[in-house]
Image 1: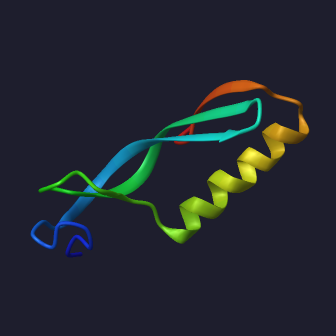
Image 2 (image 1 turned 180 degrees about the horizontal axis):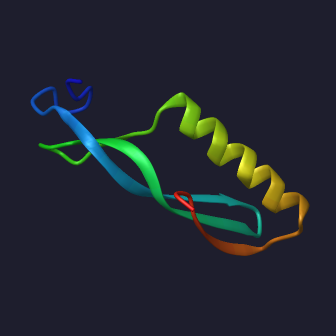
Image 3 (image 1 turned 30 degrees about the vertical axis):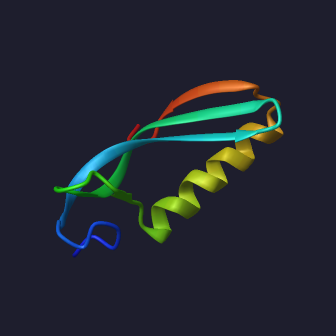
Length: 74
């Protein structure tokens, strides 16, 4: 896919880190599958992965977590 940001690069499979913060809650997701521009480094996460991250975040919030480091691939 052509990068929507730099318009010069193309995306390649890779992994990224996503940090979600809301009030006193901070969640860090490592090893999240993404498409990454080989020119500018812009990261694109699919809708399916986005839904999974947000669902997991909702579950962690319900548990009362304040700070959590999670391995998405696990």
